[in-house]
Length: 423
Image (cartoon, rainbow, N blue to C red; front, top):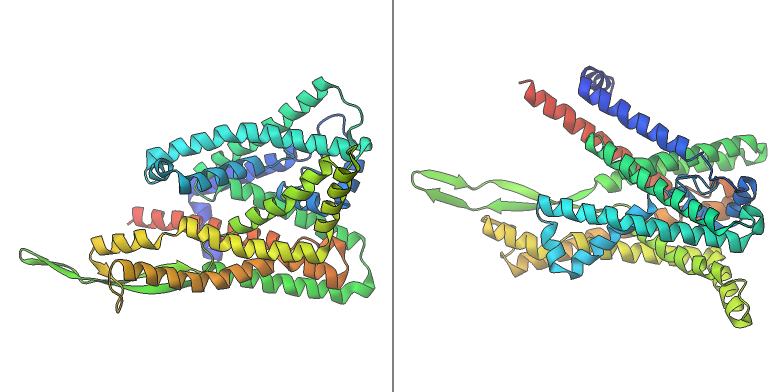
């Protein structure tokens, strides 16, 4: 570990890249504390503390929502735009073909950025309207001009973060969007730790120690599952061309336990948040039936047991769904057959595709179960401990550890590349 740090420090361009990334994250955190004028931030914090759904959104926005900051939506609209294009690639063959080549991927990335802008405007308008209808203390009476200025400011903040994320990604020491989410979650974890220290109760010392133990076990589990993979043996047939023999090598096809990463959790959060968020708009409707239906929807999703069950099932289902989107056993089987490769004991073609699909389903079952348990871990901890400040945990730790692992791998690849260049 110490030797790696020395190597990073000696590599001037890598060291400068890391300092640049750190500076961008500091700018992001500073922007998250710049509030939009005309907002009662204390009333806003109280409102988010009493609303579980919005509190979960605030975690992924890096805490900017509680300050009603200029970057209060975080990179959420950009992630939503990316997910939309990933899903469209499943049903539009032309879009899938574009993703197979570099120029096409650049074009899709450009469309993703364009779609982010209207999504940011819509989400900003929806959040501001929700806050105005939920409590008059937060925003009060604002004019149409001030409303437009707020929407433009918040949408511009999202575009600014998207730009920062791309600048970070260009340094090749980590994914920029993931690092921004990472910085926001770490900031939230630090605030949670500070709150626990300030409100420390000696009678709950063992509970807090137990929580720390569970956090360590969770981190270890995340590392094991993220790095876990099933190596399927692959044999390449020997080919004779003239007087030379080619092929005959033995290798393996790695099938990861968690191919989907944290995308299923993001999908599930979007689905769970959507109904009660829409219901917030109709809670003060003049029609009694609509108002009662909106209140019932909010109460239904606020129920801890119902929320946990739905959340777990959605994460479990989306893990299988997203794996089907990104993993194509038929295409892999065709590529192996074209290259003269085969899995020992399995016929090439359709049989290989079926074998890979069945093997993947068995592996993903473990990954989906793990992701589901990680997602509801905070709810379980809060139920048994009664400590509200420990409500964030499994999902946050999963994202933090995943981003750290990805960043460390990219840094190690940069160091390895420099070792080869120096030979």
